[in-house]
Length: 190
Ligand code: GLN
Image (cartoon, rainbow, N blue to C red):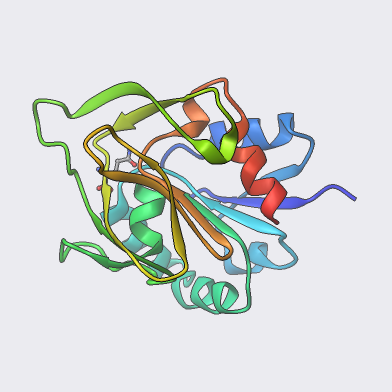
């Protein structure tokens, strides 16, 4: 039976995630209400604006529900703003993260000059071919807890993708390239 993946659709780049997941043969649909979280095999929290998304998650009564589902083992993939929302700590008071992945994250870590950029990065978990990573006002991972594995680093050592138990996250936007390996890795893990 096809896996059912919800993509949080309060704001941000959710349509692209739905497209990639469907192309990989799984079911994907937008999630806005707590009841739409029932019966999912996995959830994607997309990029966007984490301050807005964290406020909307509270308004839509999704925050506690998501924390509960994460505790019960629902696999969640967070990209960019989604990664910020998964984190235990964010170096910014404007965001209330879910605190469900043992990482600390810094928002907008690349400053104004290099606000957005694209680069090929090594991702040994995906094989030998580098992954083309698109960074848009991206966060970085400043600390990973025990049991969290860094999946990709920039040449200077900055951690930009990680996996911890059922959670997987990236600073960059895998849904904006034609390379489906990131989503395939997530689907393989759920
Ligand atoms: N800068 C955004 C934030 O802090 C994240 C950007 C993105 O998701 N592309 O929430």
